[in-house]
Image (tube, rainbow, N blue to C red; front, side):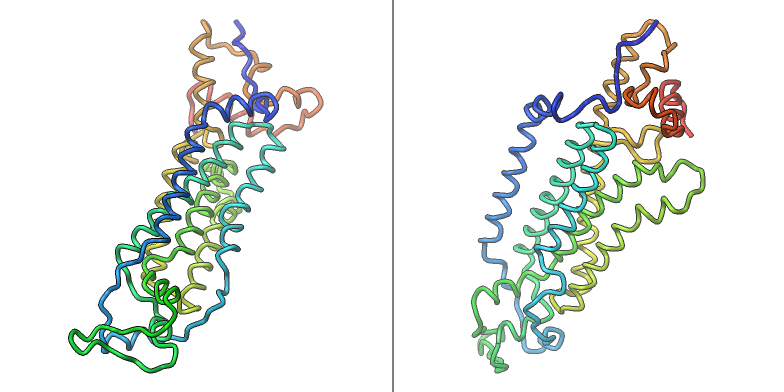
Length: 313
């Protein structure tokens, strides 16, 4: 007995995009709420941590105004680059669920990370390594005679940013976006299929290398202490992992390349069938490639057949 047709690649922006967007409208609205919360956090004056004269020894690094990697570039690397890869995969497989969930996932990863990072920045108020020159641009240090705290004479906005060292926003953004991309590539490449292809491992680790280099640039620019970068990497990595697993299975599973939504549809399809025999015509890959593309990825077909029979590698 044949099962009702479920086609991997049969869900396009035109056929299912509008319905999918309506179904997840509240998720997109929450993204806007997170963006508004972060805007509010940037308005709040951070905690001004006590900075005595003896503490200035580690805060006299040069104040380099121009970033090696500016924040606008981080946004492109952490969000736009992953989206381009998601779009390329969509153009090849025609799965709007994958495109939608991956896009929503990386945006959540970045925005949740941003809110967490900026909340901690405001609460901790740790001085940056270049705090001295922010506080005293003329090089003349002045301290409160009563408690020994700094009496800054510099630009208020520059001083305000000087109290936002911990954790690193550039780093947390990078690990949030590129970390999500790394999980995504790991699933799509089937990096843990136990076939020993080391190239897959290197490819999905590459985004983490770029994220690490962005973090290192913040130490080199004297905008952050190394502990700020380390904490930012932990935050971004943790949030990106949770956001990815919210939409996709673990990459080491037999169905790690698919979305939870597609797998749920497949299970519902199986439950409706009175027989475990499945015509290969209805296996969840794009039927449009069946006759004309006999060279279709054999691994994908084997994965799908194993999925149906509840097997794993």
